Structure formats: C-alpha cells, structure tokens
Length: 423
Image (cartoon, rainbow, N blue to C red; front, side):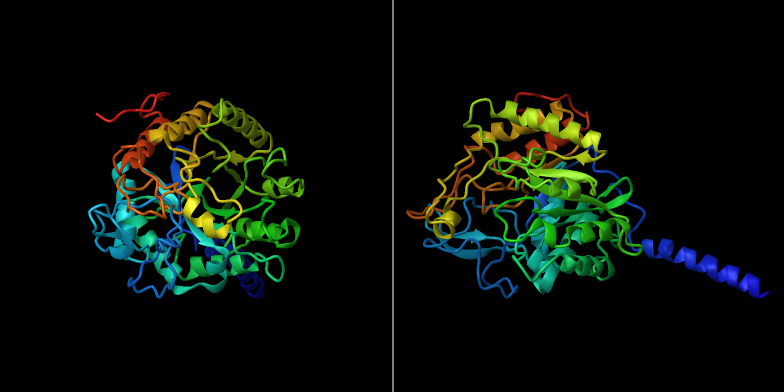
C-alpha cells in the first residue's frame, strides 16, 4: 500500500512541469513564422490629454520635434491637437497609442491589408518598472490580435539597459509577469501568439551593437536564453535574437567579439537589423543585400538556426537628431523611399534569395520615418521642422505593398520583381 502511494506521488511530481508548461497555450493560429510577414510595433506615442499621464510627446513643437513623418489620422476615433498647423491653418492632429481605439484600428488595418502581425516592442525600462501605460497598450494589442486574428509576439529591446548595476534578470521577472498576469501566451479568445515549431517566439533585440553601454558578456544573456528555452514553468519558448547586420563577420556595425556567435547558437532564430545599412542611393546595394542574405542563411543552415531578413521602406531622422546629436544632424529623408521602390527591392531580393519569413521595420515608427501604416502626403507646414512626403502615393501604399509581399512569400501570387501597381 505504501509503495503504491510512493509511486503515485512520484508520477504526480513528474507531471508538474508538464502541467505548468500549459501556461503557454498549445494552440495557436500561427504555429510557425514561416510564410509570414511580421512588423515591429512601437506603441509608444502619447498625446496631450490622452489620460496616460505622459509629460513628453514625440510630436513636440516647432522648436523640438521627435518625428519625421506625420500619420494620416482621418480614420482614428480619437485625435489630439498639436502645436503644428496644416497648410489651411487648421491644427494638425495626432493619435495616441494609449487609446484602445487606436490599437484596434491598427490591427484592423493589418487584417484588411493582409499583414500577418506584429512584434510588440517591450523596452528594458518598461520591463524593469512595468509602468501602467505600457501594460495598457500590451493588453489592448493582445485583445485586438485575437479580435482580428493577427499574429502577435513580445520583443524585448535592451535599449535603456545601463552600463553597470543591471542585467537581464528584470526581463526574466517581466516574462513571468506577462505570462501570469497578462496571459500573453494564452490569450482569452482566439489564440494568436506567434509560435515556431509549436513554441512561443520571444525576441531579444540589441545584442552585439558596439554603441551600447552594456557589456555583452556580463548582463546574463545566457541565463536569459536558458530560462526562456528550458524553464519548466515559463520556458519552452523559441528565442529570436536581434543582432547587427554584420553579425556573421563580426565587423562593420557589429562588435568584434565571437561570444556573439556563442549566444546566437543557443537561440533559434536570427534577425539582423538592416535599417540604415542599405540605401537606394548606393550603386548595386541590393547586390550586397542579396549576397549577405545568402551567406547569412548558409551559416544559419550549418548551425541549424532559422533566419528572418529585415526590410524597411526608408529612413529619416532629421528632427530628433538636431538636438540629440547636434554634431551629426541627419538630413531629412536621408534614405528615400522612392515611392516604395526601395522597399520592394529589398522584399523581392530577400524572397528570391530563399527567405521564407520577413520582419518589417516598422509598423508605426514615425520617429525615424520607417512606418508602413497610414501616413500623409500633406504633413504640417513648418519653417523649422520638415516632415517627409509620400512621393504622391496614397496613405495606405505601404500597407498594400506589404500585403502583396505576404501573398508572394506564400506563393499565393507570382513574385513580381517590378513593384506591383494597384488597379
């Protein structure tokens, strides 16, 4: 009788990790990243009067603005006046990421245009302090992802991690909080958390960049990766690492430390950051992008890793750089969009090289003018603060292009090397 009781107790103990593992839903409408185009989602925009309690706003004013691109706000339920004026003298309006209606509209667009989903950016300070407004935005996003059946995942951005006195322990604690309290991997309603090989994908961005204050070797990255992959309660995840473009060769924009390769080989997916690394103004730069992609993918195959190329529509960082980096002010529209041709060249180059999944930088990033969501070709008029235009294209041009790219990635449409035209 006693032996039977011991055997029963032993079998019960064996089942505890399996039961605990169910904190992550085994189900997902997105069991693999393959065949998907995911975008990065900042969600950090606040506006005066939105109830978030924020005191600083990205749009700023004519003496100090942090954005280079203006959103098309014609469809938002709530908008807020700014110090800027439109050409007709009316106050220019902005949205707030804090509003649930804003997030809902963005995910509605994703569904409407066929964009598969987004990685929600979770910055180190948000993870460490868990401010209420970032938690509200996450909750709204996961609800909208279920409502519109869009893939969603968490991307931790190490930006904000200090040179000393901090490590990735805060991210471990935050992941437990997100899983336990916000149920990110087990949403109510439709289960849409992005998985790879049936494992929830968690991204860690900012590894291997030489301009960071933190040291790669002493912030507990191996412990964090091991926790996400192997913890009996909160683990079982697929880890994606956001690294520099030159991660494989350990030069150029990457720190020359082979320890980066040690970390990468412990992960599952490699995401190189290519914003500003390629330009349509450089002769044959897409050949360089193609060659790097092919060689990166070969390295990943050799080490049994997945690889996701990064594409972006263009870049402009003039207004923010004026006061953040006065000795290195960026020109407005420094990497031009060319009406979408530059974006489309990257997409077709990556797919032609054999890419089966893509990461778009970014969905809503108007600070550096990489946004693909609806922006306006008629931004505010200012003598001190220039905003880039859309080359005469409609507000939804980049949403439409991204949706076309997703169909071509999945072979639902034949791959078109020339940029497609809307009928």
